[in-house]
Image 1 (tube, one colour):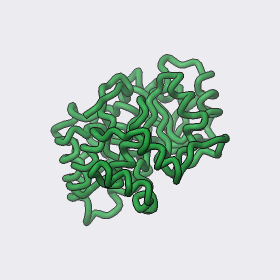
Image 2 (cartoon, one colour):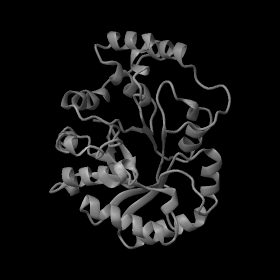
Image 3 (cartoon, rainbow, N blue to C red):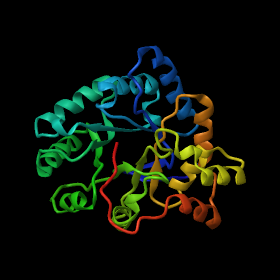
Image 4 (tube, helix red, strand yellow):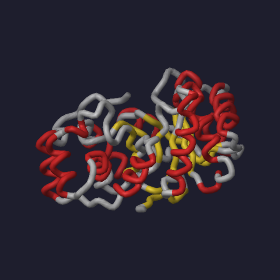
Length: 277
């Protein structure tokens, strides 16, 4: 598995997302088992959030990493309405309790909110100094937000920005991705294989998949990872899908493959509003 540096850790370029996990207790054991298998397959970067299942996802993660915490790089996110000087430490403590761990490797602000960024960063820094988190970062921040963040004096720098990115949602390529590349900041791509399945039924994706004897989901992942400095965090519960995700990092798309996909979703030629779900 290819790797890169994220929050002072060496992590795989494909991790495990957990959005929508923890919402149905009847599926919980399957979700736990899936995360455990993912860790065995080398997908030991796990992304979650207090928002997912209103803490249910973090509980699933806590069960999955029990006894193997040192094998995992753990990412979680705080609600913007909890991102105050007092709210962040309380939210972090709740997340730690749900995941049954004493630290989070990377703690993100889920999206820009109403609290001043200076206050949020100050709270993140206190958590870092206290050993509760390793590094901090953001999610769903556009270039203007990143520039505001960069202008704030802090003891440590933002470690990542997690954004929506896949072949049909590539607006970040216009200015946000280049800005992050210049800053040597990894981009974490959520929903890297889309949501409703339309992406995976696209004729160009299907043709490229046939060329590589791969699945459409694998091609979407390979496309997201075609540039350096990008991490994909697909969610999977089916063991077969997990194994396919792990193998997707081996696929190298040709220029012809990329040009074919471009016919369906061209690279952005102008600034677009940052897409998010």
